[in-house]
Length: 270
Image (tube, rainbow, N blue to C red):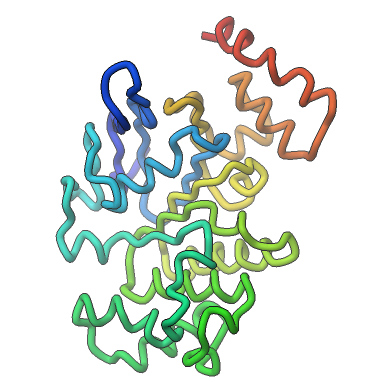
């Protein structure tokens, strides 16, 4: 890569449990993301991709390896400036917003924690930035649609002016009709605000739409890393990536019937 990486993950390891029952959720994963780039991690549920995000976000302090953001090495606990540098948008907009807090309170809380001035102006600007506006300021989450809730969650992540957004399947809990709107919003925000994304999804079609490069995970390992351009022009190299690529086109009975043979094919590939 020609420019220094803004996000650098080296030999990341996360293990749950101990002894024979230990689960290696992330097993030696390494990748780097340039500033302004959108990098996607894709794989089936349980492959470890969301665990990578949680380690970077400081939500899981028990990890090994090296995590560096903007040249600053991250430890198990984070400084105030490190938290402001990198914010996370969660998968479930229903669960990530406190049901008894207004939108105003939800957006004001990070400003209060980080002692950021101009509270009212920043809240209104954050809502306008995600296509809502001041009229939503004193509503409660139950008064919002799923897409509106996720827009509020995005506004909350952006209100501290981070450089990096960690996006954990941010549209998978939304209706199909709303998913494209939120994805387009995220794409516009990245370009306008020169943000850097680490985007996690089980859907390769979403990743190819949103990202410049993609890393494919399975069983805690990074199997393949490629650019989206290479993926679309030459096709995936790894058998598992080919399976995801075909599955992203929609359900296919023959594909489902042959999925059981995937492990054997991977052994030949390795």
